[in-house]
Each structure stands twice: as C-alpha cells, then as structure tokens.
Amino acid sequence: MNLLTLPLRTLRRKAMRTALLTVVFAAGICSVVALNYVSKAVGDSMEKKLTAYGANILLQPKVDTLAVGYGGFSLGNVSVDVKSLTREQVDKVRTIELHERIAAVAPKFIALTEVKGQHAAIIGVDWPEELMIKNYWGFEGKTPEAPGEVLVGSRAAATLGLKVGDRFGVQGRDFTVSGLLTPTGSEDDNVLFAGIEDLQAAMGKPGQIHFAEVAALCSGCPIDEIVTQIQQKIPDVDIVAMQKIVKARMYTVHFVQHLALIVSVILLLTACFMIALSLLASVNERKHEIGVLRSLGYSRGSVFSIFCLEALAIGMGAGVAGFLGGFGVSHSVMDMLELGKEATMHMEWWHLGVTLAGVAVISCLSSVIPAWKAANTDPSQALVML
Amino acid sequence: MLQAVNVSKSYGDTLVLDDVSVQVGKGEFVCVVGRSGSGKSSLLNVLSTLTRPDSGHVLYQGENVTAMGEGRINRLRHKDFSIIFQLHHLLPYLTALENVMVPFMNTLRPIGQEIRDKAAECLERVGLGGKGNRLPGNLSGGEQQRVAIARALVKSPEVLFADEPTGSLDKRNGDGIVELLRDLHTEGVSLVMVTHDMGYARLAQRTVVMEDGRVVDGEEVECVTHPKDAVAGEIITQA
Image (cartoon, rainbow over all chains, first blue to last red; front, side):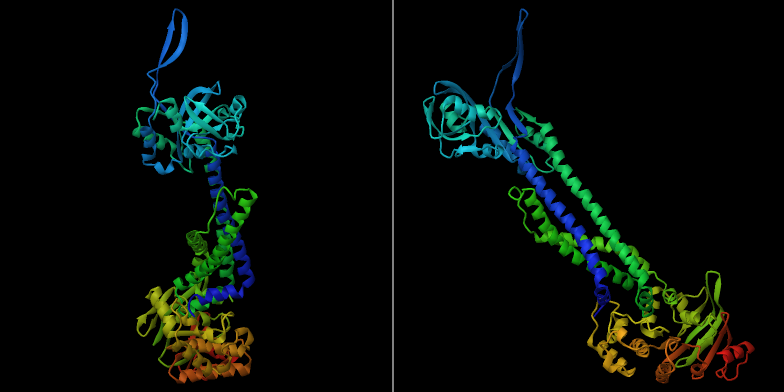
C-alpha cells in the first residue's frame, strides 16, 4: 500500500464514472490512432497511385535552337548540336544526397524503324525501372524477361498485326512479342517497348539515351532540392521538374495529413477538458477527504499527486484500449476503402509506447488545474465546510 | 509545550479569535468549552497548525510554528500532532485497518510490515481487533470514531487534538471514546479536547472557556467548579 492506493481505490469505488471516462477517453484516442494510421495509409496509397501516373522529373540533353528564316519564309526553330545522354550521366541521379527519395530512374532510347514493312516507333526501356513507373500497365501475355522480348501497345499491335509469341526483325535482330498492352489512352498505345540495350545494339547506338524519366515522389519530398542536387551532379543536362503535378500531389497528401492532425488535436483537447471537468467535480466532492489527508501530514505535492495519478491511471487504461481499438478500426476502414492491398500496417510496439507517453502527458496536463486546486485546499476550511 | 500567544484570526469580516493566549503543558489534558461560534474549533485549528493565525503566534517546544515553512508544518502534522474530528472522516473506500495506515500512505514507498503490525495493534487497543477488514460503512458510529482514534494513535503523537469527538455519538459510545482518550492521556500524551459536554470537561486537568473569540476563563485548573469570571460561570451552567 502506498500513495497509489488512494487514487486506484477511488477509481474502483467510482467504477461507473471511471468506466465511462475511460471509454470516452479511449474513444478519443482510438479516433486519433485510427485517423493517423488511415491518413498514413491513404497518403502512401495516394503516393503510389500518383507515382503510377508517371515520373515527375525529366532529364533531357541540352539542345541549342536556331531560328531559321530567309526571304520571308520561316522554318521556325531548328535544333542544332543535338547530343544524347549517357548511361553514366543517368546513373549519377542515384548518387545525389537525397537518393533515398528517388523511386525510379527510367532511361529511354527511341528508334524509328520498320516492323513488318511498316513504320513504327520502338522505345528502348530499362524494364525494372519502367515497370515501376508504369505500374498501371495491364498485359495480355507476360512482361519481357529474356533479351529480345518486347511489349506492344494496343493500337500498334492492331496496326502491325502482332500477337503474343509473334517474332519480327529490326535491323537484322530478332524480337519476340511477349505481351500486348491493354489500352492506356496514352502514347504508349502507339509504340513498341523493347529492352534498351537490345534496341541500342540493333540500331548500332550502344549507350545512347534520348531522355530519362525520374520518379521522386513521397510525402514531404523536397522536389526542388532533388532537382538542384541532380543539376549539380549532371550540369550539362536539362532537368525539368513537372511542378504542377508535383504540387498537386504534395497538396493532396498534405491536405489529408493536416486534416487528420486538426481532427486529432480537437479530439485530444476534448478529452483533456473532459478529464479536467471530471476531476474538478471529484475535487469538490472530496474536499473533506483532502482536508483529512492534509491534517494527517500529507504535503501539497502528495495531494497533487493523488489527482494526477488518478488521471494517469485512467489515461493509461484508455491509452491501451484506444490504441488497440484504433489499430483495429484503421484495419476495418482500410478494408472498407479497399486500401488493404496497397498499404500494409504492422503493429509496432514503439507506436504503443509513444501513444502511452503522449496520453500520460495529456492526462497529467489535464489534471493540473484540479490537482492544483486540491493541493491548495485549506484543510481547516475543507473540514469546516462539512 | 504548546502555546498560543496573542493569537487573532478572522474569516472575512468575522473575527473568530481575538487576542487569544493559551498554553498546554506536556502530558496535560485541556478541555476547551464554550457556546457554538465562540471560537473553540478555530482555536483548535490554530493550535494544530490546520490554519495560520492572522496575528500572534503559536509556539511548540519553544519553536515558532507560525513562522515555519510548509514542509516543517507537514512533518509536525505527520509525526507530533494528531487530530480527531467530530465526524470520523474515514476514507470510505479503505478498510478499517487501511484507514489506520493512511498517515503512512503519503509516498510511493510501500508500507512495511512494522507499520501494519502497529496499525493492527492500535485497532486492537480501541477494541476493534477483529474488524480490521471491514469498510467504514459496515461499522457503527462509535466504531468508526474508534478507528479514527486508532488512526490518530498509530503516529504515536505528542499532542492529540479532539474536536468534539463525542458530538455525533450516543452517551454510551461517547463515554467509551472519552475513556479511551483519558487512557491515552495517562500514558503521557498531551490532550486538547473541544467539547460541549461539561461532564467530559470536568475530567480534564484544565478547562479553557471561550466566548466571542476570547478566553474568558482558563487560568485556573479548577475553573469548571469555581469559575472566576461571571460569563464563564454562565456558559458552564448553560452547558
């Protein structure tokens, strides 16, 4: 038996009040935990979906243009001294300080050639990187695995009469159709995709890259900083950040997070006021008890602690229940929103620790005014009031 | 041992103690009597450090209690002084034995076996040896007051203050409580008791009579039988 006995016995004696307070507080914590988990999951999911819409940084060789016109006839701007990117330049993107924020670097080599006697555009791609950026692609067949395998856009397949398993030659090199893209509504429908090294070899231009797409999106991603760092690594390359898309993505992610934060703060403030009001009522109700304790030699600190510990005990109970409840609720909500496959959640014990620490601070803060009032109760007045 | 010197105290515009001087010797049994509102309980509160006087001071073993800091006063209340109230003021959610141990629950350090044994011994002493596990609600008024006395005893106080300890009890229970307090006094505990009952007051070594916040008699040990002040005589007669 010690100082803890008094608040714990009080809570047990007022079981109904304790239970109600714990349930309401736990509901608040449950909402906060669920909101945070769901907002994080929604953010992750949104990020994945947004990333799937394409890259957000474009690397292209520097091009000088010349306005050509003579005798009143204008040819417009003509590109001169066109260079191409090299693999080394593209690979430097992954060496920047913020390299962990780079999701994919997808180089492209474009070849205009003939396939089955018809003009066609073949895009050489780095399959793993390309499939990461274009994860919205649907296939008939399978993704290319072996050298010489290609994917064919839906419209190009119809025009060229290509089916899965068909073979064709480009500049004397054989290619096999491993899959057909389902219609995307984009330029991808009109072209063929081959392994970049196969195509470069077929066209006799090994190592040449026409442009590269970089996907660098994540919550709170400092996109401007990434562009600056890439520019510093490869200064002789034009880097275009698609700011509009990036800003829209960031705004959406931040909006969800801010909304969750505001709702969480409101819920926690409500819980704080609820505990404070309940304890204030308890202090008024137990004035004589406080007077007796003070007359027995309890210090102001001891009396203060009794009410703080009472709030803390409720907080801890509500914290554990609220966290577990919140975790369960967030799972249900994610299932309802069909986000379960896109964002996985794991029970992290340190999350529970952080939640309990936060709840402990909130509980103690909310008990400060009632506990202070109790500690400063004049014992003689408290006993006279009876 | 304990002395109030020219003590005055008021609550708002109401003066409840007016230049009161009283002293209690070591091992002395002093009764404070007077009409309702005469300032008896206020005097007890000042002497027992429950409240500080507006002017004047209280001396305990030569030290000025009025000038003591909060910590020293808490230690006095915890070790040297014990107070018994008219209403027992037991904590309803603790058993009788736990109520007796309450003075030692003021820290996070668990109560040791020594304190438990002493608390059980005190309960035994007040005649409640077999009722330690009962909640106050399951005890009679007299038994509850006995638990309160055991709670006061467990600290082995130097001075025991009793504010109308028989006020809410019938005659039989009241007599038992006063008998118990007298026993404690004979063991050397100084006893200051506020009472309306002149029968109990006659048992004291000295009686202090109060009227309108002032001591009107109390310098002589036998003031109850031979009041030197006419007002005191009237109060004693009416009581």
